Image 1 (tube, rainbow, N blue to C red):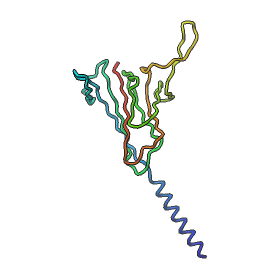
Image 2: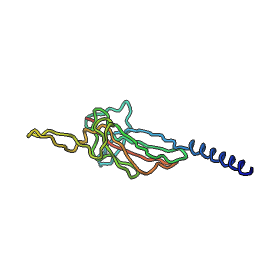
Image 3: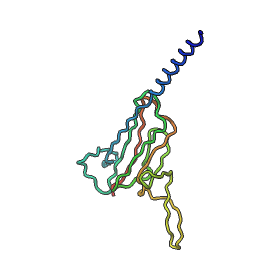
Image 4: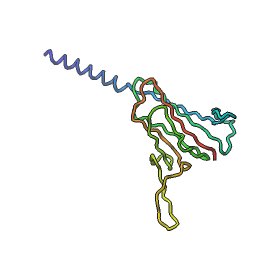
Amino acid sequence: MQRLPFAIVLAAIFAALGTTIASARPNISLKLQAALVQHDDKGVEKLVPVTSETGLKPGDVVRYAIVANNSGPDAATRLVPQGKVPVGTAYDAGSASASNSFRIEFSLDGGKTWSVKPTVKVRTAAGTTVEKSADPSLFTTLRWIDDKPLLPKTSESYSYEVRIK
C-alpha cells in the first residue's frame, strides 16, 4: 500500500518536469540593417544607414547585417539565418561573414536549392554541355549554417554585401 502513493507522487513529479521542459525554449529575434559602404579620402570605411531617402546609384555597395538574438532561457539549435540578394543588385563575392564559425551556402533559385559552390550548365561552342561555377552575380539568397547552438542571452552577427547594378 505504501508503494502506490509513492508511485503517484513520482509520476506527478515527472509530469511537472515534463511540462517545465516542454515550455522552456529559445526566444529568437532577427534584426536586419542596411548601410551604404563609403570610403573617405584616406580610404577609411564609413557606413551610412540606408533609408527610403537614400539615393543609391549603380556601383554603390550596400552591407546587410543580420543580428540574431536569443533572449530565451534555452539554446537555439538549427538556427539558419538567410539573406536575400535584392533585385537590381548582385552579391559581392567573398563578402559574407559571421561573428562565429559557420558554413555559407548560396542559392540560385530563391532558396529552393542550396550549395556551397553553386554551378550552372553551359553549352560549349562544340555543342556539349558542361558544368561550371556560377558567377556570384547569379546568387539570389545566402544562408549561414552553424552546428553550434545560439546560447541563451547571446547574439550572433551575420553580414554580406551587394552591389547596385
